[in-house]
Image 1 (cartoon, rainbow, N blue to C red):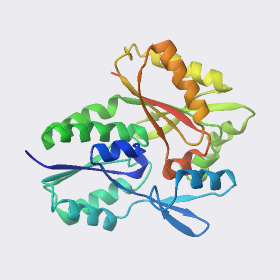
Image 2: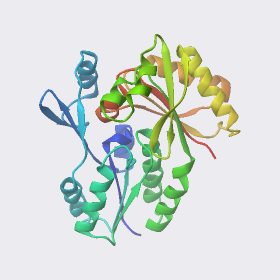
Image 3: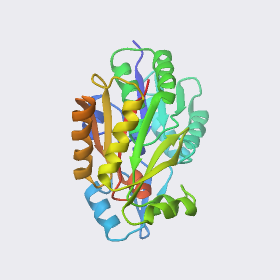
Length: 280
């Protein structure tokens, strides 16, 4: 049986217990705060990061370098037959391109680098599917085919209190960021081929949850036997309300819950939450 290593970046936000269970290799981005650099999820805890964020610190992120990926790839190929690296959307970061460069420097035949076109749990769900298949003995070709099949099917709905963080990080135009600063207006964003796009704006958290439920109902998907991803930056109470509504109105019982790491928190701010699911 082929030994296949599944690699991703820290913006996939996979819960640590699942990273360990499925033997996933996570390469951290770098978080910069007040001239000090930290490896996401390694040198700074989520609690400390969000405390600094709420105190007004404005962190930035630095993509994983080709050299960092090269070192990981070289080390893994000593023990594994193949590597499948599933990396956050190339439209959000240069991390994917770094992985491609590292692949070309190391071994183009034994490494597959996938642009997930997603980030946070959108990417994480693809990585977990790949890791589960690898553990079950699937071939490299089977895993890659499944991942590419899933990429266009993953949907997510993100609600933000403020879009300032996305704007300051260069991920959103100033004209759109302004929408999030109107009193109690909650911008709703969805993934559009690797980019976040504002699809609506509602007033108050209850209407956000209503919007999420209505959208998911309109997909026509039977969610009763599906696992749905839930994530928050530093707003677990809101996430609990979303989960309760999904249980009550859509009959969902399986959830993949996560608290976003420093990378996503840098761009989303401390008051964001989202739902991730496979549409068809």
